[in-house]
Length: 76
Image (cartoon, rainbow, N blue to C red; front, side):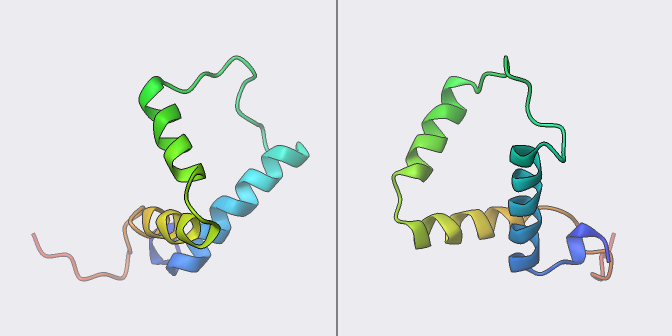
């Protein structure tokens, strides 16, 4: 299936393994000179201040809302 058809946990795992691949050099990482904007840095700080289980819940919700499920019945 495509990304949109994955479960919330599978989507979260996808992003985790993508990040691990970047850390390990298997996937091209963000450029060293890349700088997050002020709003993004503030949001990341807010996320990092949460308890671990709450972080996972927030990230799972974000990942789950990404992508379109190709099997969903979409009416125009």
